[in-house]
Structure formats: structure tokens, C-alpha cells
Image (cartoon, rainbow, N blue to C red):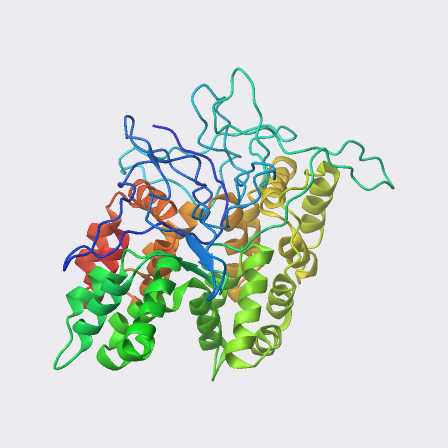
Length: 507
């Protein structure tokens, strides 16, 4: 089995769920664990190849109905959006997969050439020598200047050696002479927010049964926690929005408030996070991170770092709409010095377009600038590296990481850890890992809080489950890295209803 190099992110992550089975509910098909979804649903960067012989299955699974934007929208049907974006209803538009696969390699169609992953990240992702060697192999070294990964925003290419879902290298400038703006061979496509980050998007279909079952589970004396888990755990973001709308319409009640009054503890936190959906949960989490005394730095890292411009802008808008405050100002006021500068730059949402070709001169210049402003200094200057990390695309960060290793024979991640400390160190490493291997990043983040911090674990598993293909890759990476099954580990470490909820989300 081979490691399927990193693709995107970011974040996360979003999966097509299956609706509650029981009490008359219809089961929606869902890719089985270890299967690689067909038709190139892009898993998060750092995908891991499934077991040989695993049946190919389309993702997202076919469902009744389709998706519609907002109440009263025209009932025009179109294909359910792939996680991370929405289908283009214009049949004359270029047939391009969106969100385009991130640099780092792809699951090619039959006969397509297999690309290599960018060089390994020393100092942070060493494999467990005792772990079963399946599903994941360390990336191989590729000479700098070659294209070991393809930037986000690939365009389809036909040819005798390419499969149906293989992609060409990114569109390169026709002319990139100094003083002239690059002329692209293909028009750049605007980046869309991830699935669940359009507040007006909702799944079509009748979700009355799910809504009725939730109401029965909480009505009267006591609460049927098992039913709450069985109904809510399989839903994707748009299905969750539809269930909440059906609950409000059919019962004249707010699902969030009812769950809040009927449950407690980390179990309540997990259920409310699911009901809120990824966008509102991110907005609420960031408010929780900065209000009051102290800062929950891990929340800011998990929610804001390594995100697309479209997702950052959606989170800022949701935050300001919900709390009538500026997210940029709140984060800036709560952090200190260079860490505040880094997050302020991140929240501008002006990262380099993933469609753009990589300028190798810029990459080399950035690698030199990072080294010159941090190496051999009594006080390291974080200004340059923060600016570079905040504005660079994932493709550029991978290239900078490789160029730094080649030029200085030193891992960029290790260099960051030697030069910085505290929240700034954690934030910079998080951004770098989000570009180089977010699958392993998530596996390590989850492992760090199992058995010690249930609040973190609930938050990270809920975010992970929105993108089920990515989640399945994380489970493979976890076994590779730690030699244990993630579901079994969570089941043994987290007790009660909270544990049962997390296991249901992971399965």
C-alpha cells in the first residue's frame, strides 16, 4: 500500500453522512472505512491509500432530493455539492472539480501516472517503527524545482495515459517576464467556501422523521440519549441544517435550546456542536476562545489557521452577525505582540491563490528571508516568517519547506521550534503542517488530547467528522503513527454518553 500525498483543508473537512436508521428512517449509503471515494472527492491533504481491492464507491453517496440555497429559493435541482464547494449549475462552464485538489498528489484514475509526495517533514512526523505498515508510507524526496505536487485548481487533461479523473499540471503563465503580470492559459476560478460555510445552503428532502424522533427523545421525563446520537451523528452539514429547520417548523421549538436544556457536560457540548454546523460552531468557538480572562489558544489555532480565504471571510461574517463584534479586533486585543500580528494577517484572508503557478524565485527568496531573520540572532525577528506564512498558499508553503531543507539542510519545522516558543511556535507549526500533511496533523492533535482533555477531543472529533473521507484517512494515519486503532482508543478512554457519541462520529 502506498501513501497518497497531501491534497487540501483544510479543514475541514466535510463528509456525506447517512440518516438515522431506526423508527422508520431510511439508511443513506456511505463509503465504508478504508474505501477511497470515486470521482475524486478530494480528501484532506496527506491522504492515505485504502487497502488493495477495496471497492470503489462514489462520494458523496446518492441521496433523494438535492441542495437548495435558503428558504424560498427556486427549486432548481443540481448535483449535491462536493464537500468544500457547490456544483456549477451552468452546463457550459468548464467542467472543473471544485474545490480543486490541493498540491500533494491525487488518487489517479486507471493508467494515470503516480506522482510523488513532497519530501518528508523531519522532526515531527516520524513513524512508529512498531506500527503496522499499512495504509501509509512516508513521502519520498523529490528534487526541488520539480513538481512533486500539483497546486490547487487543476484543470482536466485528456490523453492516452490519463484516467478519467486525472489532472494536468496547473496552468502556467504564457509570459512571466519581470515587470509583466502573468498571463494564464486558463481563467482562474473564484474559491468557494467549504461545505457548511454558506449559511443559506440546506439539503432538500423531507427530514420530518428525524425531527420528530429528536422531539420524542427529549419530550417528557428523561432523555433518550441513544436516539439523539443515532439521529445526529451521521448527518452532514446541509442535512443538519435541514433537520434543524424541520424541527423548528414542525414543533415550533429551537433544537439547540432543547438539547441544551436536556443534556449536560461534554455530551451536551458535542451535540450542540453538531447542531450548530461547522460555520456557526467555528464562530461560537472563537468567541469562547477570546472572551473573559485568558485565551484558549488551541481553539484559535484549530479554527483559523490553514484555512482558505473563503472560509476565513465566512467565519468573520458569522462572528460579527452573531456577536455584533469584530473578530479581527477581538483576536488582536486578546493576543500579544507577534502572535497578534500573525493572526491579524491570517484574518485578512488574502492568501495567495492556489490556482496560481509557483514562482521559484519567490520561494527561494522566502526561504532565505526566514533563515536570515531567525538564525543566529539573540532575539529572533518573527515579522518576516509571520508575513510569509499568512500570505502563502499551501502549495507555496510546501515549496518553501522543501527549499529551506535543501538550502540549509535543516527541517523548517525543527528550525521554528528552535527559534520560537509558546503560542507563536504552535501557530507557525500548525500552519506548516496544515500545508504539508494535515491528515497526520489531525491524527497527532487528536492523540494529544485523548485521556487528558475531553473538551479538546470533542471539538476536534466533531470538526473531523464533517469530512468523512478525510476522517477515514486520519484513522489510517493514527494507526500508522501510534500503532493503535483510533475508534478503539476513544471507546476505551472516554466513558458514558460522550464516549458513545464520539465513537458514533468516528465510525
